[in-house]
Image 1 (cartoon, rainbow, N blue to C red):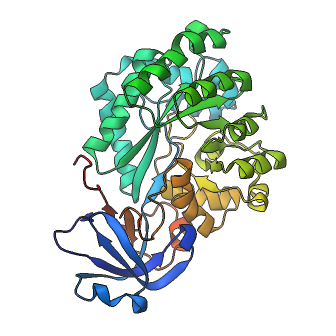
Image 2 (cartoon, rainbow, N blue to C red):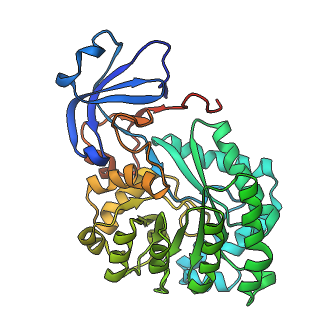
Length: 409
């Protein structure tokens, strides 16, 4: 169910239990939010509603919970095919790294994605996107990285942009050409960067397809020195960076991300206390991906206590991808974040709202406060903790999505 946030007349004033998140963090029973022209213009206790709103239309949500709409800040939503066979292999004892070195993993999805045209990629991506929207998501980050050639990387990013024309959703794109080394460049990662990755980045940027630049810093992918080349190219183009770092080992990717002032460092299971200090100093968000932790049966937990101690912002995301996290439930990611990583329900909700927005460089969403976009979610629950508590249950009542004036319908 969708509710318009751009009414013909002034209003509405929405009355509900509020989970404000963000700078106004806390739970506010019986609150009020005034919306107009796709924007929040007032939020607070219903009893404190200014007289200026006396004549505005009221919409009483009858005790339901109102939160910022959710943000999935790390996905590989656009891709061809699936990797169910690898799921079987891992159950038989093969590690994620062993699967990759045997020709599976990312490169197997590359073949399926290269073979898919734009229409096919859209048709495969939409059901995944629709599932996220049905759980209150209004903004989704989508990465490239399953092309590993110029043509397919551009196709993936064009498809990602088109999703926002086909559904009421905000899409942020990340160029992930440094995701894996394709078979024809085996053992020649630097040549791949020179011949394919960096030219693809330049072409994608010229076409207006890139919001940020990502990479995979890992023994089965790219070294810190190689990622530095990608980050320098991003810096030259004026693009922010983020990084898959310290998922399977500790190579120094998190420290590298911090040195470049990255929007986020993602996975970070093998990050250290020193890494946490570096992220905090850089203002970089640690994006935890419990779906991948669960799917590949990882045992090394990210250093959540160190992140808390040093004030590192913590976000959560699905990491929706065909191999290591075939997850399209942001609510389940919240539950996993609490159950597997011992986040509090409040941290989980902030992790998929204000902190997830921050991981995408967005400052106009994720918080119920004046000046924010009217991207909101209405839930058939009374308290915020219920969103992370349930498993396999979707309590969404309705989603409010704003297309500010001037944005395409």
